[in-house]
Length: 281
Image (cartoon, rainbow, N blue to C red; front, side, top):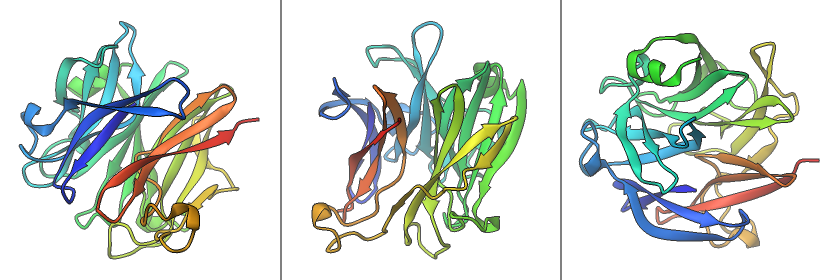
């Protein structure tokens, strides 16, 4: 599992990795894969992180989505390709879709998948104050052509626009990932329940959308996961942390269980990696 490591008060962030044989007991490896000093279009002492699950390519390599901080503090969308040894075989490149790269916008990708022959990519757009945010999806049959040349894009759709929503998420929308289960495709969508003046202020909530006749439909049971913004001194089992659970979610289905890996905030201001295990039957 690729893991972001934060240095200082969010001053810099780099990509390392952890390994597990059972998805429950993990070993962190103090071996850096990538930082912004290796990316020509990044802030030299800035933040880079991977998002979602890597996409396996036909040649046995893996496409990894990246959020990259630029010199002006905005984020841009990028990707790199790793081999099975986690060696970089294609250096980070910006995703050359006009709406999703460049210094004048602020965005990064969230997740990628291939379903019924179509590649799908989720992107997160941040507002100037990081408050009113959006999740979009593009589809294509040729992911590298779309990323390199902005060609072959079938559709571009807004999945969630926080300021216009009235459902369980109408504060922000900043986290999403695909889940494929029983031949159906879902989006696990999360963020905060109410608008605020701060980047994280209210309860974190996650719900489901399902792909029905090529349209994304909200599951009426949502939100399915609700976590208080501040849990310190409220729940004894969480005395080791203080902030919200949720962010950069990564789902894996294994042996009739859905594992959700995501960040867990502390007051350092570090982040820990947390896991949720859910039975699928």
